[in-house]
Length: 94
Image (cartoon, rainbow, N blue to C red):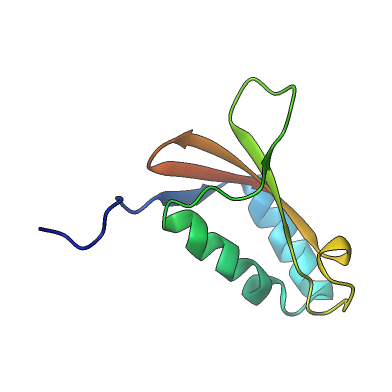
């Protein structure tokens, strides 16, 4: 028997996400560490954020705190991701 009730979710990313991450990390040095808790929760199968209305796919948005800006989540990042199925999530943009 396994202690893990849900299978691990594979988190993939688009070229746009990778490009945005590289560009923003030059200005905001802690970007990757700020996003890591959200990515960890997504890998554990937790559903974060709000579903974007008017989109026919399961696309969600979630805010992440920017520790470089000191304005809380409102001055932070918005992560947009697509839930393909129960075991696959694609990061669209940040």
